[in-house]
Length: 197
Image 1 (cartoon, rainbow, N blue to C red):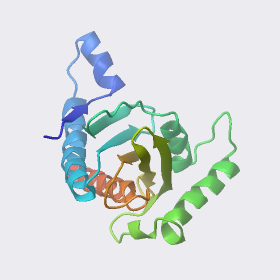
Image 2: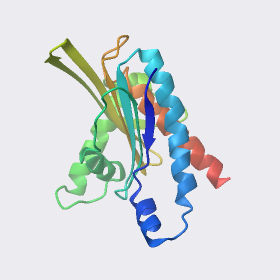
Image 3: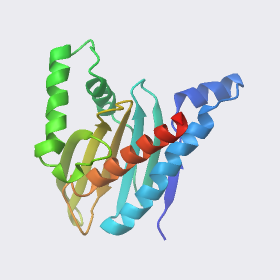
Image 4: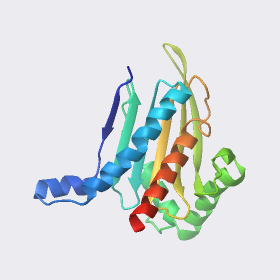
């Protein structure tokens, strides 16, 4: 049986619980988990992978949700998500100029429009991001990890990252983790539309 767990990592919820305030964000966080739980579970089965993990990160620096499925997944949210949040919104940072951020943003857009992740093109949501595929050698032979980190071009508030470990069906990040990220982004987009109506 597959082990499945979800962890809420929202700093706002933690602070409010310490201060004893009620939070409307609890439902918001539950919405994030509802979106990623079903998507992650389906992809684990379809990819016949050992395990996978999905992160949702808000550009304000708050980690909104993390889901891990499978055995032995030990992960922390990398600083890379914060960098992508700056690139997605083209915010000037202490380290990078606006021109540099615009160039990187353009490169991430090109990955989906005519690069290694053209399979993620969608009429509903414009996804930008970066693929990665790793192969390492361990005691049991080769191990593979496919990654994709991306955001919605039209609503770049959320950065989503997926990592898929040892998929038996596909290896490359664009084919394993990429569709997971795209589906989570579509779910976030649909959720934001329903909340605004």
